[in-house]
Length: 324
Image 1 (cartoon, helix red, strand yellow):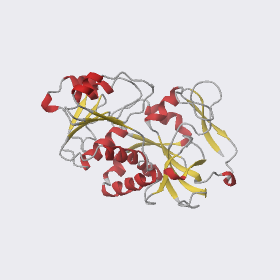
Image 2: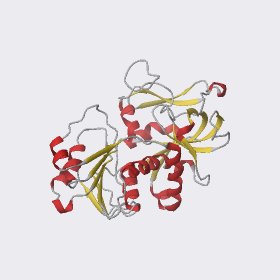
Image 3: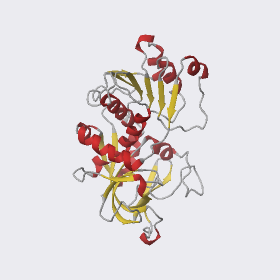
Image 4: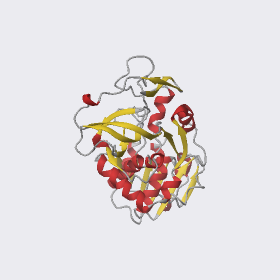
């Protein structure tokens, strides 16, 4: 079977490798024929040279040369299954549990997969995985109806946060990003577009303008947690959704204490449930079908797809990879 593999920082090459043996599947795992994938911000550090060693990494720079790595947002067809809820021929969306989704066939945990509306093209259905993550995170915030909220980072994940928070009844949604997102603000429920770095936005807020909820949807650096704490109103909540690249972050404990804040974070649990919730949400909000995936690359151009994801620009949102 074919797979794309990182042969060095910023460089993919296609290789031929033995296909997984369906008879060797672990309990509750499935073998998928991939149909599409999408690039998450958490995949990009590995493309640049690697921060998180894959379990198969044995040498060299941090990411690994493991075939198919790094990509975890996938759509595929079940080829073989040892999971009671998945059968051969099922179309599913979700997580490639080993982050090795850029391959013709992928073995993954069936608990991270769910069926989807077969009327959706695979390169559209990929949006259900990040949407599921956002829906689960927003659940943790409780009732946001009538509240003023802000989302730092208006890339693909941040825009989904804006959309879901508005749909959940937020009175006002502010989107903060150095990239101008005014062209898609109305589609994603953003009431105020702030085209600036987070610290500049936070520094000029009056007490009356402070949101009661701030979502940090950037990650991969240490500079945006502090302005999230600065910006949020007294007694408010900060949800740190962006994936950290550093194990320890500077944290303004005095601001956290004096403002009586709540800091939340965490990965998506109950994955099959929230993937089903994402399918229902997309059915209720069909505007996301056309407005979220902005670029589709054939898998032969996966290196260009990752390169584009490293350089966000107006008009570029989610980047999908067609593996058919």
